[in-house]
Length: 322
Ligand SMILES: NC(=O)C1=CN([C@@H]2O[C@H](COP(=O)(O)OP(=O)(O)OC[C@H]3O[C@@H](n4cnc5c(N)ncnc54)[C@H](OP(=O)(O)O)[C@@H]3O)[C@@H](O)[C@H]2O)C=CC1
Ligand SMILES: Nc1nc(=O)c2c([nH]1)NC[C@@H]1CN(c3ccc(C(=O)N[C@@H](CCC(=O)O)C(=O)O)cc3)C=[N+]21
Image (cartoon, rainbow, N blue to C red; front, top):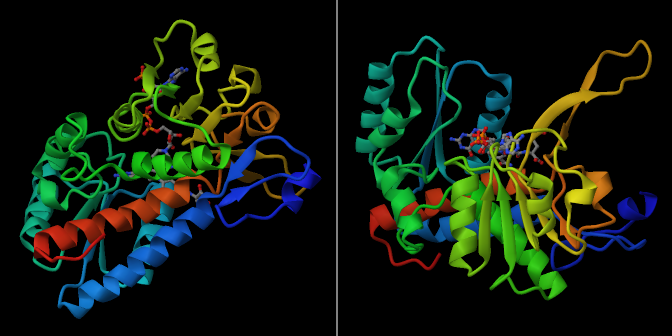
């Protein structure tokens, strides 16, 4: 492990451990590159009289959601966006939430609306998501955007942020290993509308042969072992073991799981983040892997900013390359 930490990120955003083993794809670094491009393009857009605006809506007091929402607001400000956050009590009713969405749909200062999920159980997310104007749906969850992705119209779709960010990291891994996605066996574990399904669509769009696995999949280990590209989006800490990884595979670990960390005797209990893939076990097998934290998480936030800028450019009818 010491050799792993000694190596530093190289110009292509990939860490090559000096002791050999999987390449580490540096999501923090990749996200900073994307954010720098966004900040530069935003200056151009602002000079043309349009300031991209992002509204993040949080219902209830889930501490993890509060952390994510805060980092989204910070990133928006760093990009030069107008940024607003709505913190609604857990008791908020659907009519009030729908009224807020309508107000934001009509607000010319807002180009992106993000409704942080999960909502409190009483509220049905589909109805609220469908109320968001597709042109402002920077999470890419509205059926119009999901449909555009499904038919492969990436020039018009707003693509969900985590899947879009995962593809950027996968491209870095593929470039570093001179690996061609076209025709490759890709396995996505997880089929949520937010992560698993859209990642599978993006991989299909790149001509991978895609399998989507889920909780009813019979031989999950055997399925994973076929994968040249393995994407884990399950939400179960380190469920995918090292010996489920095909030697040389490109592994994208989307999972973000907070688990108890061993604490020194007497010290207060601590927690740490782990992915859905047993990271240490996989280092000796994978060709490349994204770490948790510092992998897909930071890219998700960067792609949310990218979607907001894209939405603003489209709504404003600007002729800016982005
Ligand atoms: N890095 C980031 O920015 C983000 C990370 N995440 C993380 O990604 C993970 C997945 O998120 P999300 O898609 O929203 O989660 P969901 O809970 O919506 O979906 C989980 C998926 O995993 C499948 N699954 C659950 N248990 C098993 C199992 N034992 N074997 C096989 N498949 C299983 C489920 O199958 P079934 O459909 O059959 O129930 C489901 O399709 C979470 O850890 C989440 O925190 C999420 C969003 C952003
Ligand atoms: N409508 C909606 N869209 C989302 O995209 C969405 C959501 N709801 N609900 C929750 C999930 C989760 N999510 C993360 C974003 C960033 C990090 C992130 O930046 N993680 C850091 C670490 C952060 C920490 O230390 O806690 C990292 O992995 O390095 C993680 C998770 C977006 N989500």
